[in-house]
Amino acid sequence: MSQDIAGAARNEGYHGFEQGPIRPPSEADSLLLRVTRNCPWNRCKFCPVYKGTEFSVRPKEHVKRDIDAVYEAVQHLQLRGAMASSQTAVREDRAAWAAAWHWVRCGMRQVFLQDANSLVIDPGDLADILRHLKGRFPEIKRVTSYARSTTVARIEDEALAALREAGLNRIHIGLESGADAVLKMVHKGTTKKRQIIAGQKVKKAGMELSEYYLPGLGGRRCWRENALETASALNEINPDFIRIRTLAIPYHIPLYDDLASGRFEKGTDVEMAEELALFLESLHGITSVLKSDHILNLLPEVDGKLPEDRDRMLGVVRAFLDLDPPRQFLYRVGRRACIFSRLSDLENSFRLSQVEEICRSHQIGPENVDRVTDDLMRQFI
Image (tube, rainbow, N blue to C red; front, top):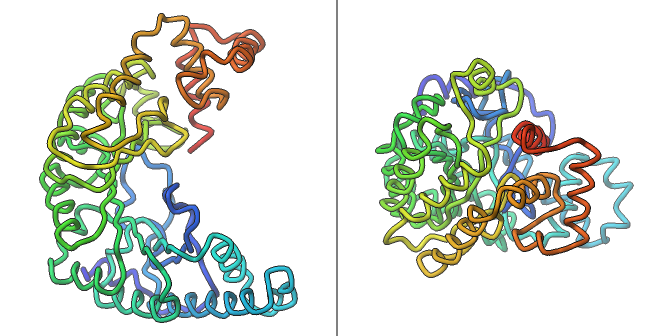
């Protein structure tokens, strides 16, 4: 553990079960177990989470107490039933009880370690936490964590393998872009080379790997580089999952300041679809599952297995790009207003009439659709 991270592990009293603010959509059914608080890097211009917060490592004994609190709640729930447990909830840790109740309802199959980079702590401490978790809940099928590529790249292969043996079997890494110019521009704090090393180390350790790609992160100036270099990096990594997260820029983050000043030009939905098509065309020799599992994505049907589904996914993007401008306009508004969930919804007369009414009542037209859709996307951040 580096000196700065070690210093973040404080002598503090235990104040009960904790959960952090975010998790991947794929971890909706997971028990959220907080190992660290906030983000040790916290400088990415595009990220609104953790800004204005201080990073700290929770003492491992506190994390183990969280596990024990959930275990006790689960025992009550399973023995007495969820509806007969209100008096126990008053006596016990309410947050642990609520987490346990949700987890029991979801089948108790998976756990997600929070917050932004759990692997930053001492590997031995993390392995100890994992063993305690598996000791309490041997039925768990999957334990997942976010991690930064810079952190993973520094961990010895033997330590990663030991974490896998202790129960950590999936890692999510925010690659975002494989283009060094883009990574530098958004203060990601890593490089394409380091991203590749980290991804390959996770795969070598026998863990499942999810890598995230942000279409639009290069802006209008670097959109081609963002697509091509990201595809190039992923071709070398061959992650289990590639997860698409279309760029949205909420207020009060550094990238919004760049947008407002003109230092960054955000692409439109049409331009980001062109980038996505180039990205898909540039993926070669990999067997990843591509997931479009977020509301920010314009075309949720771009979801499938490589290489066999690539042409179908490309066909969806090209079908959108081939629409005449009025139909593109209506689809964009309908998707961003959560009326359309796929391109074929343009053929649904009821939904289409809803979108047309929204455009009339809110005076949305080609001249302001970019601003309106950007505002709608901000609601989901």
